[in-house]
Length: 405
Image 1 (tube, rainbow, N blue to C red):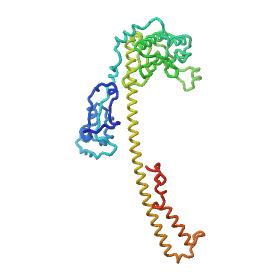
Image 2: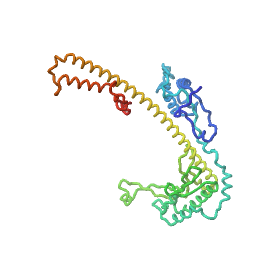
Image 3: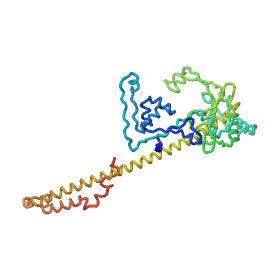
Image 4: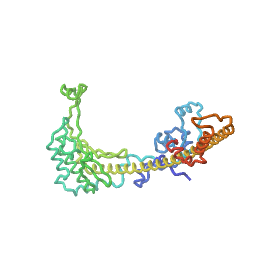
């Protein structure tokens, strides 16, 4: 029977498990002996391709399973006919594992087919039921703020209110950006999701889907043209500022969803030629929902990974605690034995001195005669004897835990 896989070794794409769907490629149960034979039969890149993972990931698995791998130049030597010795597979240590389950990563394109995301036709049907006359309440103060504001040196409107800091457009694109966002917000609400403005977060326009809070913003692409900086610009920005840019609006809008996503997730949607964002709202909304679902799956995967790491850390710390306590006891045992041996040696010495006390009758140590000194010495030795002094059995005092490595 295969041993349970080590949490750091199971190369498992958690998205597959969380969605309850079968992975794109079949999982591989690999024993230590089989993997050892494989990596010495063919290069790591080819063996890794069989499992659907990278050679770097396979190298990490081999390291955890304590499998030696061919060094640099090994395969070249074999190709040229030179002798190339194969390493021996040594016995496992306590921390290693003898089998793993390898799951190839899910292809990034599978993010586009996440369950729970409605098709475009369903989104379009929901949009048809939304009111189209009045502007969305969240956008009314935003529109007023930007219509009465000034533009920066690039021509981008600078909002007076923090509530409008999710818009970065020129005056000429403001109305279309507001209208596009109006369709997006109404569409999201029609699909059962919540939109709000929270100035404590950047960007302040927030999309709430289930337990996840994502940001929405819209921006206009500018065309930058380099030119030599004027003397006034050099004086303003510094003498090193020898090049400056002039900006021209392009009218091309990009809608972004802000969060952490799986690789391959599309989180930006732009005008495409003559087709503007407002002309492809159902497709854009579905893309936003896919990105939001990707964000959720990544969060769950990160939480599961963090849980596994925390559990592995807990196990490591428990093993380390037991190891250090064992080392502490062994060191204390040696200290007791050494102390008893030293005490017995001192007693033998004192007995020898007492036997020759007549010859040493005139000896004085400080203000003590020999008899008084012998009495003091015996008391001192008794205090150092673990068999007479219980203090020597206080392991934390004799061998502090922090002093054990």
